Image 1 (tube, helix red, strand yellow):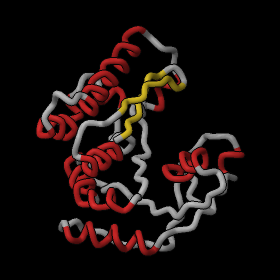
Image 2 (image 1 turned 60 degrees about the horizontal axis):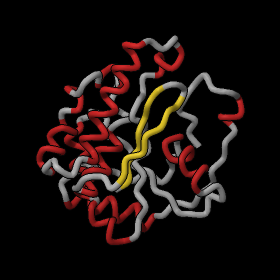
Image 3 (image 1 turned 120 degrees about the vertical axis):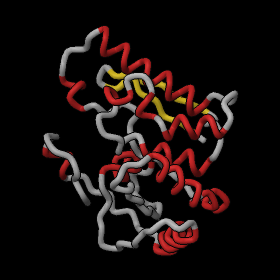
Length: 199
């Protein structure tokens, strides 16, 4: 387990999620990435971080499904993450569940200061842009991809995401699907609007 967060209650550092890995799937992913010219390496020693164990502990608390976790590219370039998704599109044929574990709002400081009308407006404007970008079937895929590549130009993008790491898993999912999301789910967490997408 990799508890890659700080400042949380003691219990959050005692979470266990003893799911099995899947060397076969890991090798398939590695080969698909290699075939697309994307450099990757396998690491059978790395533990599961919160991007995996938080959603899956809620979805599959028995930890009885084999799991493989992929890292982001440290450059955090959106086009590279869409490219990773495109390389992995063949996984859709294999009944593999792909979860882009992130958060559509990830400005942690803003969770702990009083909300203002201006802050709510910025949060809402980015969420509406993201929902439209991911689920508007009137957009061409070229338009959708360009919008995702240029996400930092969206309204209030850097207010909602000072860094991109919690948004980029969505780019991978879009790359795999290559189409508008079938469903956008809107919700509120700690006073901030957020969204999730199902392809």
